[in-house]
Image (cartoon, rainbow, N blue to C red; front, top):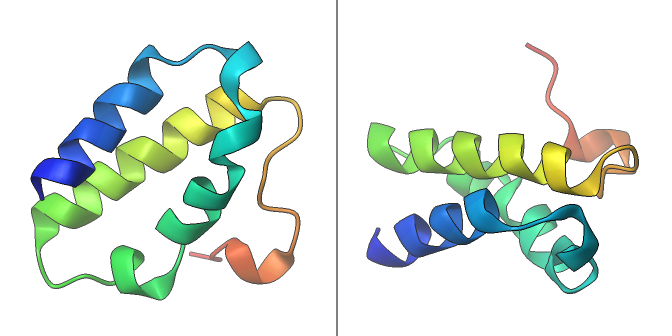
Length: 72
């Protein structure tokens, strides 16, 4: 979980001009493994990362395929 905390902090500090190299990581965090993890802290950190991804990549989100977006 420590690595996930580092990733979340890195996304928080990141500006919009630094996004190209992290699109793969953003897609990886949006997988079911993280979104449906049994640990609520992991799910919370992933949600924070995804919120920052939308901010960093705005107006173009890295989640182009509809399967990457969950319908609540």
